[in-house]
Length: 113
Length: 115
Image 1 (cartoon, one colour):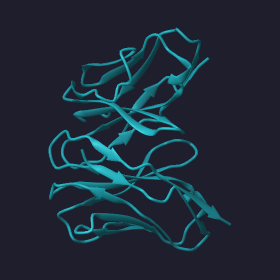
Image 2 (cartoon, one colour):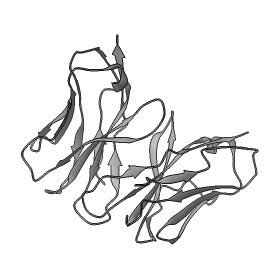
Image 3 (cartoon, rainbow over the protein chains, first blue to last red):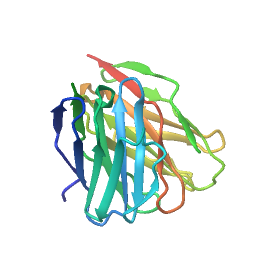
Image 4 (cartoon, one colour):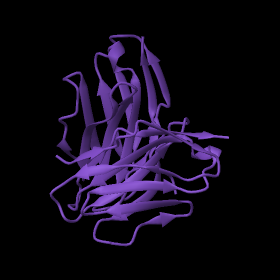
């Protein structure tokens, strides 16, 4: 079975550019999570969706960040405009309901120059 | 919000030896789920083991086992016969009982395996 698929795997762009990260969750999973990981701050939850509806976006750093989940099989995390401090690894994860574990994608390593 | 604490930022173990990684959590819920994830240098997040709070029996997965102490809110991971491939960052995580609950992660323990 296909796992969580994230794209791109690496992204290098200049400050001020728009960045869009993409995620395809595991089919049938009803929860989707976006995380950011840095050495300084560790693993941070940015936002999560249940049944395509955003439940908690309190972890989104600021208005430059936005996330959407237009359907059960696709989500995007957008940064506009990007800044060097946004450089990090961004993970998408999905899970079934209840006590089931999260399954993570391979992450996107984002570098803002 | 629930909190998950991993008090050991770094640990090391000799190859073939046993190591225990600590995790404590704070919750007022009686039913919940606990997980250990492994993140090797490849940066993949890999599920190691899962424990259901209403089960008294400690979960095991091959060389990995947990010591779940519900009253103490402790959930440690024991790795037996450590191998070089066990070197990774290990994260403890908590999830509440309700459908769609978010996960709470600890700050991680970096495990080094010495040949």
